[in-house]
Image (cartoon, rainbow, N blue to C red; front, side, top):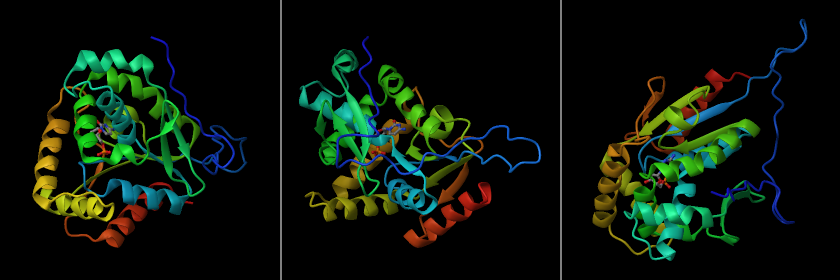
Length: 260
Ligand code: DC
């Protein structure tokens, strides 16, 4: 299969690459400054736990790159959706993979933009029907394999905080810090509902709750790389924490693990 995936970090003018490229010094001269440790943070958890908002702010605060891996699965889902392939038609989805050219770019605010076969689909992949598609296609082993090196490459090049479902268990098992963020289903559904409403999506809390319960089951019961906390992950339950409290808890973990 021809591999058409690219990570465009220095796109056309107007698109700035992510700031910083940290030098990894693995063995400094004796008596010299100690090598700076590369910072790789895996952030996993179910949908609506607040991962992406927290990860974005944490990345900015610590000068790291935020990588939203769900966006990659969403792009594959969107592509299948647009081609009229059912999300549970594994063979149909696998047959599409050679046609898919995916790029991740970062705009001047550090926001990750997704380019699918040349089109910016950053907003399109957030449609509720694409959430279901993304969850279904993410259960296909060939799709996970297709996206694996793209995710790992980011952690080779940059200090990253990467959010997803299997980052601590499969994608970056060597991450220096693994955090599993969770919250009870009602709290997560309410947060997601508010997010969607703010984005102008017409839906109800009941619909959001129903879709979330289904997606949780889908993501945690699949055979490959199911949603689960790595054995060495710190579990952070944000049910009773507001955003600032959750952010502080994460900052404390990051500063404790990667002191300046
Ligand atoms: O984080 P998100 O809701 O945008 O992710 C969309 C879907 O992609 C989610 O239902 C499960 C899947 N996913 C995955 O299987 N592994 C990841 N690392 C990230 C997302």
